[in-house]
Picture 1 (cartoon, one colour):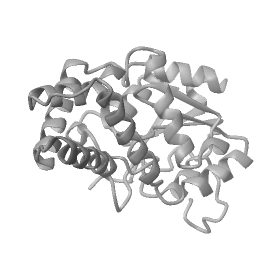
Picture 2 (cartoon, rainbow, N blue to C red):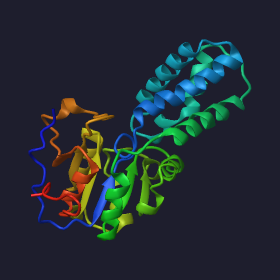
Picture 3 (spheres, rainbow, N blue to C red):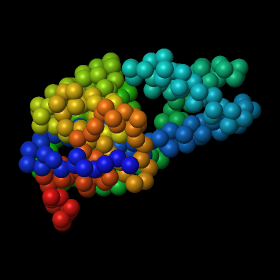
Picture 4 (cartoon, rainbow, N blue to C red):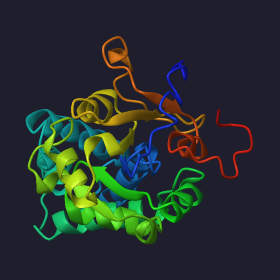
Length: 259
């Protein structure tokens, strides 16, 4: 269990911006990735007579291969490359038009079913009213990041969406964080970073002097890199988005939850 003992240490400090990870921090992505893959697997099974479970497993296997091959660039998120490798592995004869079709099916399903974590909109609304600027900082291509933010209704609440595609390398490399700071017009000491990945989100931001916290909800949590807790210690841990308001010194609607 992650300790919350480090929370609320900097209550007196004025923060001007929030940088927040997207997948499994704002939206419940991990389960939805599997469901979207299953959706495309059923289509391939019906059209090509391939067992849907076999196709599902091969797709996940090829995704891991691509992730290892391109560990630090947004290419590792390419679903069209994954499907190409999977179809080739199963010796399926197909027209090239199937590849973008499967990719579109995958993302259409994901975007139409993905859900926000509880309290995001309410918390962002309060932060915006207090003048806090908000940037979604996420690994992957810019188009998909924006489509995700739009699908969950967050466009009116964020000032920027910053994708690793814009700087080539993914978190924890500093470029994506410095670009987000520049876009928001703030300094590192004026920002808070929230994520679910100890190495990419926490360590990456901390190296620039950004106060960084882990989001660990009671349900649908997907913490990555917990084995690094001995060397990567978040500045705070929150279990709900309402708790994030305390980090900004905002006690509105929280009664006595903030010190």
